[in-house]
Length: 421
Image (cartoon, rainbow, N blue to C red; front, side, top):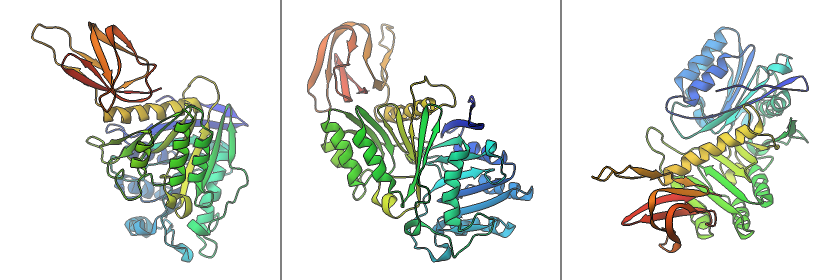
């Protein structure tokens, strides 16, 4: 991966997005990120169970790096080796706070040394676990962004030192919105950082959808929030498109909005993530191809009103994608969206006939045109079998079709594909 650096306000600004793969998993990327620490690391994760990450923290501690760790109270017992080594660890019930869910997934590096140029933030949907879920994380190198995250961490920690203060520590419903301005302008890009529950971040996302003009794409583990559902249905009523992929284990759970969105005309799908992955654990939404939301926040009422969460909102400028700028980050998340969408309708292959004619395929995801291997008659039908296009030739324009799942028929064969705008 290339690294692109932009100098702004004498600070280094950089976006580096990661998507988990079997060959280059997020545990490895985070381990490398940790070992670049020069003075300090603050970790705030729902759980830290990966032995590689635990060993990395012990090694950092041994060489004098200051470390603070916050986890959910149900996962605190798993960090005994860190506590035994002298690394301070607390959970969301520290100081008598209510027992909800500390669901954050972020870390800060070198934010206490007085040098704003090396401040780094790691944030996304990934817990520090060895499991291969479909997950994401992004590095952000910016002092102002790091200070927003640091204020949230210190509020939960109860102090800005290595020693947590139980009398000042605030979690979940006890937290306050500490900063009046969570907006950071980076070149042509603008970030907003919101935390749950004090900022009601799902409501903020619903408001963003309410201002969307053309399209929304999302990948989500859990979606139960009625207000966000209604915002998406409103976008459909305004002539926009809504395409989303749900994790297979949660789409049929209590209060899931999958059925309601499907009935309302949204193109929503269930993704049984293939081996070696386990869950579709993303929490990602792309709006109008130029705005992005990602972080720890599932689309639930708990994320909005009880849980400790983080949601990063990014609006990008008009520059073309370049490694490190906001447009490249949106593009990388869009590529991940398409990869998950393609799993819903796998690539279709026609076997090579005995006369040796060339095998042909069409991709699962089509934007404008399908090219056929030879001249012939065709039909395109929708999910309920209605013919929506038919003709003869080698090139089929599908620009007139609304987004959704279709089947291309030639002879006795029907090949599935997904049309996207």
